[in-house]
Image 1 (cartoon, helix red, strand yellow):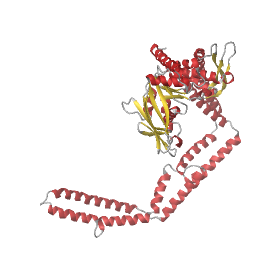
Image 2 (tube, rainbow, N blue to C red):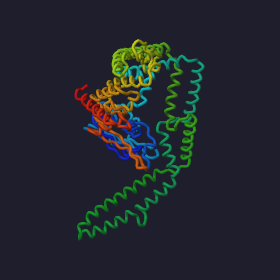
Image 3 (cartoon, rainbow, N blue to C red):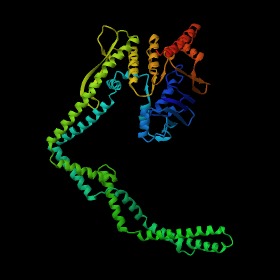
Length: 558
């Protein structure tokens, strides 16, 4: 779960450090105070894209640091990506954004990509935004939710693999049975290409060695002159370095009988003299092998030019021409060889059968889960001011795909005595919010993600229904960490922990702060949420009863 979150120069937050506990935590505050800023920060930790608007005005960069205790899934991911520290029980994730919008990310102090951040984030945090209810109207989202509740991940992966295999074999069969004219045209194209490449005969790693040789030959004169000068300075000149070192060594050896400290210096000079001789010898060997061959330079230059021209012609990199030749030759051989259509048809049929079997198993798991899921959502609807309403899941056959051979559709009836219809046709805004809460809560119970965040998903809900929503969140908090940004006092009163976001302005700068509430300050905040600008004694008494009621529900485990 998320244990600490630190922000610096982020939007309107100067500096903030927050310790978080398990259970159900509510975040409240007036509209515009910055509650969503915390959610935005966690989204960035999960790999969301950043821009310069997130850096506080006047600051050079924004920094976000989050620490999570490790779950089994996050520990496995870190180990697979070689980012797990030995004996670690937590992971530290950092994100920075500079005022130009450039972003960097680290996991346990090691730089990572945004895709890696997203992969790790998916194992640790799930966020339901305030517009998540609208996603319920999309068939793809409905199927993902059902799959999450069905816990059919292995079956879904088997379908994806079977579909990929079948698709590849079907494509191969289609190519083999394509018209003779298309086939002949492709053979002719590959033949021309290979004739071009044969005139070059590209070899693996030759491009790099040619460039090195070309560079050496182009500077052969300068290299020769430099080698001769260096050899002269080292051993052959009038004041060669080797001779001067030897003179110094002999001088000091004569003095060493008077001062023993000079013996070590003499040994050092002897070593230096040997090293100078070795270096000069190496330079002489290189000089002997250094060519100044104009004809060789022209030959290498022509070959490099041919590499360039062919690479440009066939839209590839020069160093990849040998791979293009190998793949083209293999493809030409396939096209020229007479295809065994009967075998290809049999292979395609076998792959299709394997896909159908995997898709049928996935469908079985989905349909079995759909019954329990529909029953559970219907039960939650009764608590959310939708007495007599019911929820169903229906399946519609689709062309085979990597997601199976069907899609699902969520149906509901908001009142007794009416037929169920698709959500998009019958659900009002308030009903969609309530049924969305029920669905997301049930789906979250099936998830292994340890931290769930709800960002104003209770919009469109109020009154007694708000208290039901609060109880739903509290029940979720019994098995994982739940954070909820809310405007409903009924939800806030059910929290195990209460955080308030406040915005302060001195006329020049606006900053957002956060503090944990308990006791009377928490009662005052619930009263503010109940009464708005006018807070009466009656409002305060009601707020105190709500907070006390939330605590009693916690103690009773309801």
